[in-house]
Image 1 (cartoon, rainbow, N blue to C red):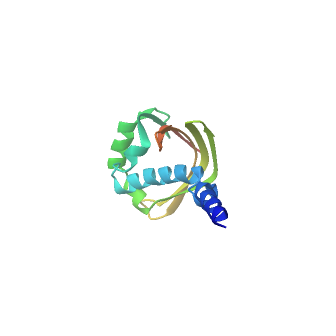
Image 2 (image 1 turned 90 degrees about the horizontal axis):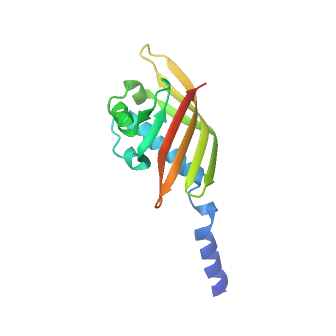
Length: 143
């Protein structure tokens, strides 16, 4: 009986059933990024982005981590009324590299008081540094 109990404890602690899934870990990083825009404070988010991370977005220009941090600090007030949802999340992990693709919907209240939604296709690449996944590439394509 003691052997079965030890086996059961080991199984449950090692099982994915009772631990955070990789998808949710990457979604948590995206949520942290969105919150940084809402709070105009990139402090918490910075630990999840590699110092050499590259970003592309609506303007199709490449941006650095430092440029994104400045955008967070000067974010539009629409983020205060905003919400981001993530659907059709696909995560593929290759050793210490992870690729995530998802549909993201950003819903906010515009300056004229109307609720609006924008949809994007996100592609993100992360590398694992120690035990932490770090964002190295982010692309947001409007759809």
